[in-house]
Amino acid sequence: MRCLAMADYFVASGGSNTAPYDTWAKASTSLATALASATAAGDRIVIQYNAVPSGDAEVATDTTYTFAGNDVALISASNDGGSAFTPTVMGTANWIGNSTANRTVSFQGNLRAYIHGVTIRTAGTTPDDLQLANTDGAHQVWEDCYFWHGNKSSASRIVLGNQSANGQSFLHLKNCTFRFASTSQSLKQGKTRTIIEGGSIASAGSIPATLISIGSSSGYTMEFEGVDLSLITGTLVTSSSGNGALDVRFVNCKFGSGVTVMGAQTPANKSSARVYVYDCADGDEHYHFQYHDALGSLTVDTGIYANDGAQYDGTNRCSWKIVTAANCSYFTPFVSPWFDVYHSGTSAVTPSIEILRDGSTTAYQDDEVWGEFSFKGTSGSTQSSFVNDRKALTTSAANQTAGVGTSGWTGEAGSAWSGKLAPASTITPAEIGHIRGRVCVGEPSITVYVDPQTRLA
Picture (cartoon, rainbow, N blue to C red):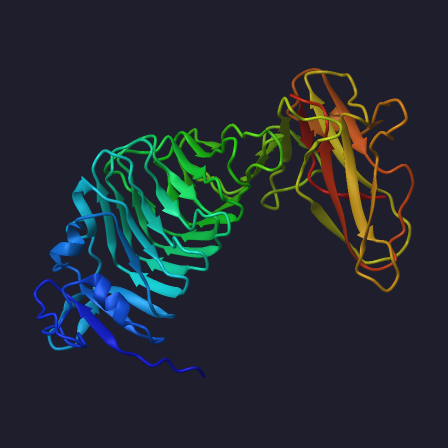
């Protein structure tokens, strides 16, 4: 078992500023001084929640706070006398930063740090950011904190992670609140992995029209789980030319009514953002799955479905609704996530996927929509083999095979076409395991309904 050496360094406006700052009476009157003193693993900087030193509550210039030690903590707490304290959040009555003037406030250090109960506040009208983990290699965990971005400039941001080209950092934000002062502001993702669990967007201040913007040096992931995003009714994720790639996942979050998950992506290819949504909604619905990239979007549809198709709750059925973007093509198709079926044998089978075109009886062709399948095709190995029913590069397009028929689907509007995606011949798995299927759509600006299950015959 690893034991951490531990010393406490107290910070309070009423301290005598006497090293080693190990009691409230001798507390440092400078947060930076205490941070510089805490160099051993397990050290704690304890700041009095309602007695933040004036030089930290109203910083005189743009200020960077640097963690000097590895595995140290910054804790907002009540002064219980001597060296005793109780963790207590600052809330909206106390803060580190500035409440009136333009100041960038940044927390950095290429080390592991834990921060609890702290409020960071910015103000003014000239663009200044609130920056977290702003160092290559930084690893910061913030819990029960309040990020009050009161700077009113539309160009300022709450910046998550390092923005430098060679930056690499990690942020874990637990039960934190994000407050903005302009509808044009956002969370700006840097070159970091960010996990946000719990917490919410503050109703005070302004509500961003777009929640997440992508920095010029992005290229990592963001994960939201259990976050109340219900006040965001505009767009969750967008990017523009010159920004990095980003994968975003929303899990069991509360969405706002009518929210757009992904906005326009520039460049319009898969070097921009990808967004996955798992069981998030604005109401009491528990079946939502979505996937979005620059080539199209996929959502769950409960109005149109195969009669013997996939179920989302063991009783009710659904389909995947794929809508492609104008830049989709045969060479650069929209590709759905995989879905699996377990196959316990090694006999020859034919996998297939049922699809539907609603509003037209014209069949989709094999350069417009096709299926891809993977299976364990090598004896003694877990390596996948792949087959598809895509049009060959040198042949003419052909209609895809008829499926279960329109009588096998529910919810289509009058005229429709039912199709089946399947390889030209059987496949013979060499090992037991999952046979995977996915749908590729190479035609721009069309809608395809997919029964999201791989059928075996």
